[in-house]
Amino acid sequence: MAVAASSVTRYCRFFHVKHIASVLDYGAGTLRNARFLAKEGFTVYAADIPGQVERILSMAGHERMAAILDVEQLERTRLAVDLVVSTYVFNIIPDPSEKSRYLRNVRLNLRPGGYLLIEVRCRIQSPDCGTRCTFAHKCSSCVKTYSHQELDDLVAAYGFRRFSHYYCRHAVAVLYQLQNA
Image (cartoon, rainbow, N blue to C red; front, top):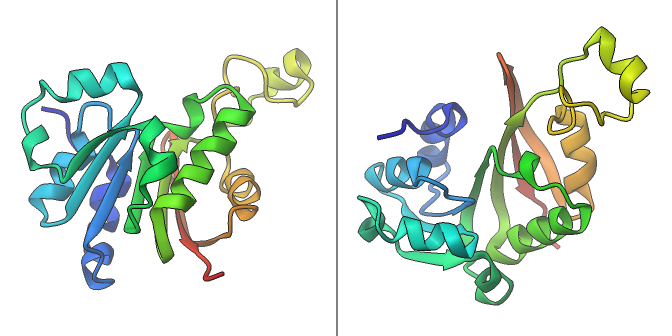
């Protein structure tokens, strides 16, 4: 069984201190984060693409979820969760319009003042990147990576403000708070 993402385990105590009760694991994959959070006492909703939802329904631990949702449903659900967890999902969405849709769905399903925890591969400046992709971040070593500032710029339009962040080895994890409208 896969271990929860380091950002999820690292911030878990903070989630309890802030009285977070409900969580949406958006891009739940193998349920590694969802199972961990359910064991920690959170009410967890798991969402993923249709093909993965079918696989999730056959996985151990899926019955502990409050609901397992197809991402298409997130446009209509308005869950009003306290926290959305997104680990290694945002960086694999290639289409900018799909990234916008993802962030809209996060906002639609998060209560005002709620949190978004996003963990992605971090950008490592490579000397050979510049000549191959002219710093447009299109070469294979950086196309699916972000810095915390790049993430800040992407999520700001959806009403999020950075609360905390940290880097470790190959990743950056950023905790955002949705500002009250």
